[in-house]
Length: 211
Length: 211
Image (cartoon, rainbow over all chains, first blue to last red; front, top):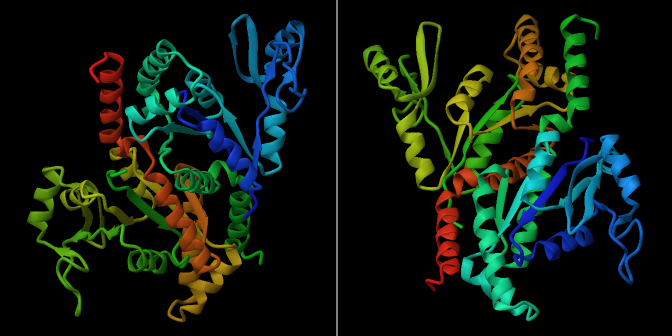
């Protein structure tokens, strides 16, 4: 059954490992396309336009906003970040499942515009384990770790607004579970309208004795 | 992650093979419990009370309705048929996924009362194949087959009200797909409130420095 791709939104607390999960999904399965954000910030060394980000001027970004060309956007440290609509729509039309890795507020905006989007919240097995993962990065002060835990506590209030939650305990199990959720979503009627319309037409014809 | 069971509602056109699918799901996997309906009709030979149906008097059925003890009910050929709530709730509390095989109107009533229920519509690969399956039963007149196809055409209008659709082409593939949909549903936040509340409590404690 050919179907439209899923718009798959992944959020999770800082330190939960969602970056690794997303990277592995794209590497292992061929149905995913990772959305590339548009930004006005300056490229860092090694960042490639169209791969890391679409790097654009403030004028171009604001023109894209006015043309409703972004699924969601936000500004952070005086720079804009957003998700270009055209590329995402094209991938979905071609049957690819588009992954957006975005934070809670952005995710809820996406759900408003695309009610058929599938929202996933990645959780740690426990709060202590989240703290351990944040500390094990070795790059963050105790103060920063505490700030991230506070943020996590706030974000946890939005879990019920998501369609699914998974616990990232063992990577392999978690990847399989996430992939299962996306595969299940292929059966959503909104993605199978072409098949359903054909079936209705065929039934109509049989009932009218045209066949 | 321990979670509440899923209320899983299966509908589909007459002749599509949903009875076989449901039977095989229960036989192969140990997470399912098949809901037993309550009815006022007289037991047939070989029908066992509590297995085929819960056989009750009209008075008892109407008392159960008044006590809101049924998830849904309908009357057909002067008999009542309904789904007892207590048994279903108990199974779900124990983590079992309860399958209700019911027709479209009943399914939509269930969704109203249990928004977290997962509704699945089983479809044939094509209208011709549905007709072939109906005819191959060998027990139904051309007139009955036509009546069922007409009914199918009407029911097809309600596919978009379902959460998922599957095509019953090859039994094995279809079973795997359905089981995948139920497993994915285990990640719905509504079924994992206990875990989420514990995580929030732990985060709260860490942030307040209680640990």
